[in-house]
Length: 272
Image (tube, rainbow, N blue to C red; front, side, top):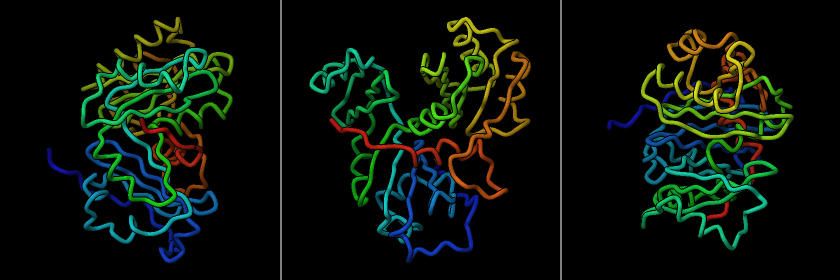
């Protein structure tokens, strides 16, 4: 697979790398690339998509950006496999036992973190990725969708909303009932028909009506792309997510940057 090309979506004129000590760097990995944002006082200064992951370990174009000393660095890690464990069953001492369900290989690390107030997330990712991000000072690592889940949790989601986040060929689905997380999972899909299929499976499992459910989409989509158009054929109300956790310029779409921007709400995972 060829490496993606970086695309700068936004660069504020006030950005000054000499002031990095006052900035927060947010990185979201989505193999084989990552997106990053630089934030100051909850305001977006820089937003760049699709930078090759190789830049993390051997920076060629981003040496200055990635070697600067930031106030804080938050890194969202993709998972090669994951499982949810209710807090009532979770114990730090038993995390390794739960990890056995993930078929962990020698070149993988296991991480654990609270997903919400009722569940712990245990997931695995490549040890090379953990090594690459370990060079950052004052850094925290979390699961890639952790910020997105927190942002929606904080927005007091109604029972009628089903949330989708599309990241490349992966769709994350999230549903809350009476303010509590009832469902979270992710599925790999190849086309719009498969996206609709997985969404329909979830709505059926949750006993939701297609006519009464509002599907709210964020991530790698736009208003009239194939995925959104296909969803609108089956659901009466499909919207792009307008939720903002940062002060954004008009040229940056809230639904596109939400999963990355929401990493600013996160704490750190435990590596096992």
